[in-house]
Each structure stands twice: as structure tokens, then as C-alpha cells.
Image (tube, rainbow, N blue to C red):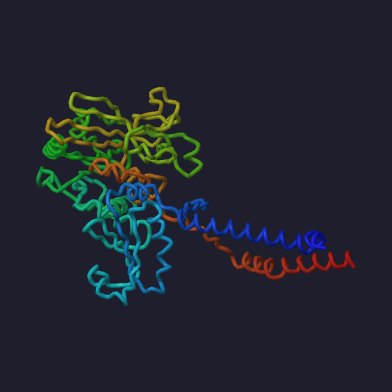
Length: 458
């Protein structure tokens, strides 16, 4: 009788069901334990919407002491920041996130200087910085300000037709200034014409596309600055002489750069790359997709940058300087020395075939301990202007160059990109068709299919 009971159908089904339930519960328990201990996720979105950038990961993983992110808000709204802040905690065990109810712990909020809800404060050691927003840029910016606890000033030369940082039009450098602010740099304009001396608070000096000649005293001031351990970036357009584009040769500055091992050629690079033309770029934009191993560009593999109205450079080392090429134009490019007319013959035998060096970075040995001059020369300035710097990866190149010049190599990386707007815009007719399809046609097809199956079985 017992054998019949054991082999009874109901008994076997009960044993199978119990085994499956216990196995499922065991799997769920193990999965929850692992998920609680190892908080991992995988972002499958095309624009990595739910991932942190390389720069943020590099900064957080490089923490040498514990960091705390304290979020002040009403307790019922803590969930609004949890997903974003947990991304930082998941990068490194040195990052801890605290949630403080700003109403119930008012003295703590006042002590932190918090005056509103939804504020995150980053603290490393005794240093604190409030995030300007709950976006990655805001929080990572607070980390940078805490870690770089000093004022770093980027001085833009003015007075000779350079791009202006206070100009928000297409030719201005206001976007460049904004990008520098995210890495905790201050930007200001300086005039070396009235006083030929680089201010002592300049961490980096930028000559952003001068259209007029620099007088010799100004060039001498730049020379003394770099050769005494200063840092400078030179963005030099080709000396075009056509229409309103009347750009001076700037021979005094060119001679100085030549003495450091970088000679700007008096030519214009035209790029016949079909990829650039497919993306809407004309031949006047030199397209770059390959980079050298220098720290400024070593992490830009797979990135694309464009350089409108560019000139080539000749590069060599000198007894005092070590110069390295950053990147060149594409093999489909060529350079013409005809700078007075927009009509150019691509088959002219006088053209210089690409690839041609477009950018270089160098160091100057001052002879003093722990003092090294640095300079970057790029044969174009339009790529850093408001109309072009948001395109491709030019913004990363611009800030990476400043990071290297300022000896902030730990900040060099690929920065957070603006999130893609992936919303679909429909016309009224498209919306009506979508509504009819989803609310009427699809349910009707399901009903017809169900009736057909019932009818056949009947």
C-alpha cells in the first residue's frame, strides 16, 4: 500500500513541485545575495545614458582618501537622486553616500551651507564643495573643485583680433570658457600690448587665432614666460588674404615657435575625405580620426575631430625643446600655398600631399629644478569657436590640451557628453494613425484571431 502511495501520480507531482519551488527559492536567494554584495549594472543604451564618463571614473577611482557625498532633501524625495549617486558609490568603495532630511536635521543642513532642497555636497577630508546640479557634470565638477583646491587661471590674449571669451556669437570662445569652468579653471582676457608682461596668476596662456601681427615686445613677453617655466597654447590660422579674411603673417610669433621646433607653414589644408563630405563638412575642414601616443590625445582613439581653415606644421626637436606630433590631416588631404583666391586646383603639382602635421606639443628645458615650460601649437583656431567646438570631439581635445599644459594630467579623459534627445516628433496625421493602430486595429486583430481559433476547435 505504501509503494502505491509513493508511486501515486499526485505524490510524484507534489515532490516535483516542491523540488522546483525550493530550487527557484534557492536561486532567488543566491541572486539577491550577490546583487546586494556586488552592485553591478550594464548600460545597453546607445548613448550610455545611464553610465558615467571615463573622466568621472578616472577621478573617482584615483581617490587617495575616502569621499562622502551628502544629499540634502526631504526624505520622501531621496529616491530622485539615488540612482545618480549610487553610480558614484559603485565605482569605488572609498565613496560613501549619505542622505539627510534637511527639515529634520536642520542644524546639519545649515552647517553645510545648504539653503534649498535637492543639494549634494562632496567632501574629501576637510574640504567641501556643493555640486552645482545633480547631473554628472555638476557632481564630478564638485569632486574636481575639492581635489584641485587651488585657483588655476587660463589667460586668453586680446588686442590683436583673437577670439574673445566674452563673445557668445559663432566666432566667440564663450563655449570654450564654459568647458574650462567645468574643470574648475577660471578664464580671463589679458592684453600684452599695453604692458608686455604675462600676469603672474596665469596658469596657461592662450593665443586664440590672432588676425594681426604681435608686436615684438609682446612676443618677447611670451618667450620669457614659457622659457621661465610658463605654459602656452597657440591656435594659428593660415595667413589668408581673400575678401574679409585678412590674417597677418605674424612673423615675429612664427619665428619664436620655429626656435622652439615648430614652424607654421603658410598654406591652407583642404581635405577631400568623402566621409567628411557625407557628414556635411566641406573640403576646408580637415578631418582627423587618428592620433599619436601623447597624453593629450592618447585616450581619443575612435574619436573624430575637425579643423576648419587649418595650416600644416613642421616639427623637430631643438637643444632646448622636445616636440611631439599630436595628429595629422588625412591621406586624402593636400595643402595649397595660394591664399589669395578661393579657387584651388586639387591637381596642381605644387600642392603638398597629405597627411600633414596639424598639431604639436613640446616642452622647454629651463635648466631649473621642477620647472619646465610647455607649449601646444595647433594650425587652426576656428575649431575651438562656438560654432564648431560642440561638433565631434573637439571639446575633449581643447580641454585635454589645457589639462596637460596645467600639469593636470589626471583630468585628461573623455568628458560627459550632452544626452541625445531621442524623442520622436509626430505630425497630427502620424499621431492619429498611431492611435488608430494601437487602440483599434491591434485589439481587433487579437479578437479576430481568438474567434478563429475558437471556431476551428468547435
